[in-house]
Amino acid sequence: GDPLPPADALPALEGDKLLEAVTDAMVALHLRYYHRVPTSAKTQLLGDDILACTLGGIYTDVEKTMIELEHEDVVRDTRHEFQGAMRHKFVDVVEQLSGRVVTSWVSNHHVGPDLAVELFVLEPFAPPRAA
Image (cartoon, rainbow, N blue to C red):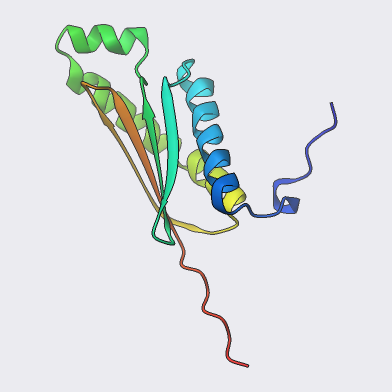
């Protein structure tokens, strides 16, 4: 197929298109690095500047086994370290899609039910200039 235009040439998305694109990007990153598609995924905009993506059914078979063997702390620590190392991948894609700077990113996971939450705090919109 045709090559994609450079990311900085793509227009910033808004509304439902942005939410769908962020959800798709988080699912794609999860598939790329965990080799697993979450069983559920949804992104919401909280206020004007927080994108919240929740992913359900996230754990791999190895992680599920570790949790069953009561080594939940190992799974949590490994995911935490990996997310920290991969921060730029998650932040970059949201900045490209939204056209806004991500000022902070919070990533966390829960066991029983297994759930990941990715929060992206966006730089506020610049106030309109007085005429």
